[in-house]
Image (cartoon, rainbow over all chains, first blue to last red):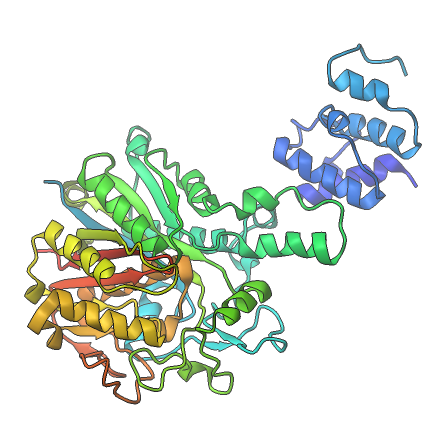
Length: 96
Length: 409
């Protein structure tokens, strides 16, 4: 399953946007996604992927790419403590 | 003293989706009570309600908007839109801080709560939809209407059960009268026809069953009454300071001249006589109206024995001998008991009765009740000039609201 494709599909669906409009490099701001919309998208992602996205990570998702990256880490069961720490402003982003 | 007039109306009810058809149906005695359509009511012992026929949110709102509003807010927004459009009101940017919204809601986002609890408890969900709170809060309708029309002035939501909208309209009236605002949208909205809410009401044992003949189920003041019937909908009034309304050549439906409110401080469900009587007197006093000048009372008239008998005694107590002459009707017999919206529907009916010079009847009246021996305008509307009218709301919880409207002259 292509995570980025699914993420863009869900964002388009939840925002009632034409799927063509949602690109991998779109920011939430460009797509008119406010904080409440963002929470709704997270809920949809959690439901779709049957996962829990920690609040601290969720706060850091402001673009489609960020969502895909964070989601991929969560899905792969990787240690996301650095993401959590980053969201809390405790460390700088780790190099990919 | 600043005077307050009604310059616009919006109504969404079982008996009509706009003020004109709403009033025409009431005058013709047509009930909007039917078998419940919003869900399968077969498991309920009460399977009837006064629902808005064939309502679809998508007929009124884009999908993105519907995601974020409960049905009670949809109803409020629709009624507000009608009210604004009928008034021809234009609010300039500099006027916005003196333009407010006050809406009643007894149950708030009942459907949203119910869906949330259902997924949580029945389906075992570990998370619920993040819009549950912003959709279900009691002020959602008020806030969404404020946002829609840029109303930045004094605004609030009232929740006093069946009096909710009466208090909202009364407080809005006072805000204009006492120079805290110039224009207000005021009313109430409610969408309580859910499986859970219907079950809750069943358990109180005040509901008419009438499943076999829904349109005749609600029979206020009639000896063969069975109880109340739940309704839904919204009504919004545009209240405006008189000079402002005159300056822009607004159509004036009626003047609101008095508002009374009181607390029974007695029992959580049983009404007293003194509490409602004090609310009526307060409204009369504020408007400097003598009891014998009241032409019409739109009754609380739920169709429960306790209400009907108590309300009759209240009217006798305040109006004295004039109680025998005043015309009283319960339009709940047709639009049902729309909880937090009901006082707004009834005030809309009262204002339109003044405007048209026609008193809507109490529908389904069959048999005189020795304990309810006043003129309830049974079954047939009556043409009559109405100079002064009262709209009564006596709620569960004993918080009473009475509005006094008079013909504008």
